[in-house]
Amino acid sequence: MDASRTPDAAPPPAPPPAHPPATAPAVRVSRARRLATPALTLAAAAAAFAYVGTVDPNEPGHYPVCPLLRLTGILCPGCGGLRSAHAFAHGDLITAFGANALAVVGYFVFAGFMALWLVRAYRGGPVPRLALRPLHWWAIGVVGLVFVVVRNLSFGSALAP
Image (cartoon, rainbow, N blue to C red; front, side):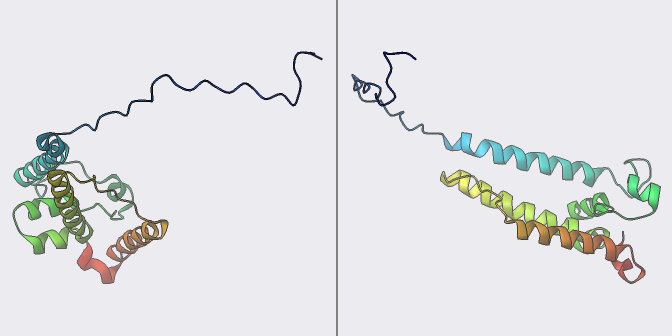
């Protein structure tokens, strides 16, 4: 046992700092820099819609076939999504909804999120977070599952592309 150390001895107190810690100055980000990420995201989505709007998915050979549909004959939740995007890009909401109703709902949710993100970036507010509770995620999953099941049954053929 080391005689110089005792179990009850406390370490010596640290000396006070010579200078108080400096706080980092608040960084002011320009409006253009705040708008860059949402604007580029919106530009990428617009470019994708422009491409799908130009290259018709109703003509065979332009896009690959859904592997689940090809192997099993079952329509996945995304089947008809490109035809839906093509019709949506041309302003035909009824045809877009008929090709894939879930995708059209997703387009509007995305548009709402982008509008919120752009407004907050313009005003200097925080980036919107998609913080859903587990119950919400389960509900989204159930809606997607019901959509897939119903569109593959005979009475749900209106939801099939």
